[in-house]
Image (cartoon, rainbow, N blue to C red; front, top):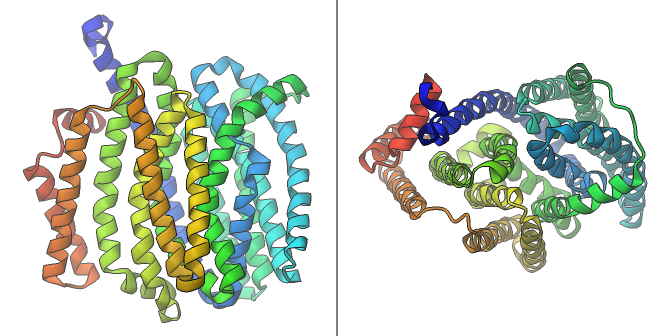
Length: 489
């Protein structure tokens, strides 16, 4: 833009330049997440049908267990590194040279503590082996998280995206081979490990090519500094994961492997719809962190547009999934998982709140309010565990689904309240936009209730009706139209 040196146009120029960078990175991540969702859809069907409900329950427990103890491996270091490197890229060598050896030491500790916990919980031999294999996957995942954090901070998400595609491709191929040769549950678990081995190898080689070979340092003062500063992010991730994973562990313990398989089948469907949030999270957090130091106006705009666009995408999808949960379950898993339909109908609403909460949490983290976020997620996790303890014995997987939704609503209330206390309050126009989007979604729901057509016919009808409502209700303002024009140009 010609007049970018003029102070009157500088904010607009910065905004448009940032939009193009965001779109480039979003495009790469969207492609990778779409491929991941498609491949994940395929391997979920294959694994669930191949293993059957009980063995699928064992795998579900192992994944949830390993995810829960990931806090020991990461400690929030990756998220902290993204924020700090976004603000000051000269810190890269100091971070990498110290983080890698620190994580290697934590990996050994993680494996030992996993074995000890599983032994004390008195699980059977197969469950312990599968869980330890998934623990190895978590170790590899944690190493990739740090390198990806660097790519996010430097806005080079192309390499992370390619690594994700490589990971999911290897995983799918390994699962297909396991099923073809009938190698069983253990090799299904190993497939996840193989995928992350390729992922970590690729992004590590690219890192060395771009930034040079790291030189290990054992600066214990720096280890202490980054550990202390990372703990709020780590605790947030842990307690966030806790109320998304503890239900599977509790169902396994209280209701058995069959109920766990039913619930996890529903949960896997829901995770497909979190693709957009995953892309958003990788792209926008370093941007918000940078804006915190550079521009208050751009920081507020990035939050407002995030909430608006995320809700525009997910609310009509949620309505569709709610109405057609049973045919979706039958399509994916066959009728042996038909009981998963009700958990799907309940859990789909967690996605809408997840988007709102995700945007709010990243926003608070970017403005150095990570301790507030940590307290919110600790509160929500405890609240969720209490609800699960009450509801699972009576409602099993349906009770766990209800507990998850209520916990997300609590997080929405607490995070929004914290944002309103800051000097970065969103404009009232955001409330108007959210109300319009909700009204448009309600109208779409009424249309589905009236027409009562098949799922495949409903998809184009919903898209057309929703687009017309967006135009009639003027949900997209001039700024939105300008952003779309800049992206297209």
